[in-house]
Image (cartoon, rainbow, N blue to C red; front, side, top):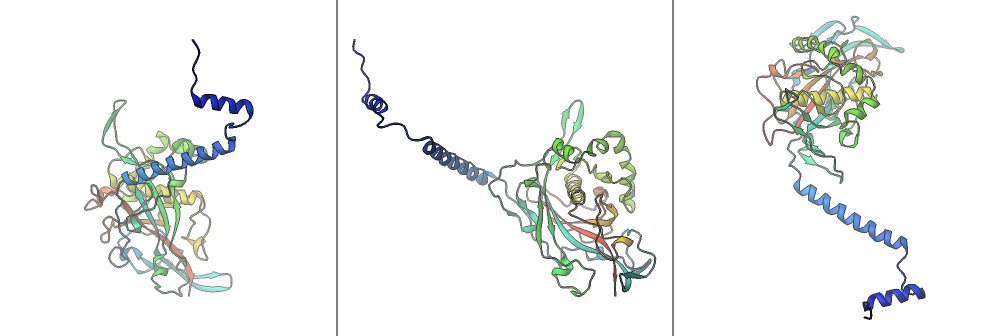
Length: 360
């Protein structure tokens, strides 16, 4: 029986033998493959954006959402001009100081300088009014898990993303604009963990920061109980720099929280790790003590006593002794929880920084 071939095959075969109708060059095929891949990726990103959770939050109101009592105590040297019930690290003892040939008085106060977002939703910015800015990157959603049984132990875990803003509130409000001690800078988004591969990977973080294997160890964590008591009662212990007091450990410097007791606790730990990481990468400097009188100085290991954290989203903590606690302070002493289901799970913090400054 005679074999019958399709018409197109005969044409194509003849074209190959004669050199006519040959397949298109490889570059053309690659071009159309790239176009197809781009269309597929774009469709996937659109589908992801349509199914992404809603971001919630509001821009902090500088009048109603700020704990203005956290500015105090105000001191000159070792003397408190305006005392406060909030714990304060030691100030330079002498009231007079000298920076080069410029004499002045040694002031001590607390300044609101940074904002921090903590959320399970990538590219969600609670402190920018709940804005979502997704550049087309897929990094996966975080979580806050319920108790689970693993290896015979009840375990709760969480995973967060965080953002770090430059927010020198006194300068932005033009309060005492000519006062040399206030930080002069514009509002800016300084750091996003979504583009930091070490924030989501504990192993990679340990390779970049090798001291993790020493301090993320059970024996090292036993000492954190003392830091928990000290940070809740007064000030944290700077000697135990790897401890985040009652909230856990500063290591690993990631958004993966293995001891998530409550959302208040685990989100606060993520914010504290963010500040710790900024110092470890030289993006945050020291401003307290005798060294800070004439300007900022390198502080690669964060002194926890230099900071206070105040929640401003979703519910601002504006009154009471524990409105702005130092890192490691217990969240159990708060009168009410500042997070709540669904629309209250995207959190923002205002970071207060201790400032010692030599000025007229």
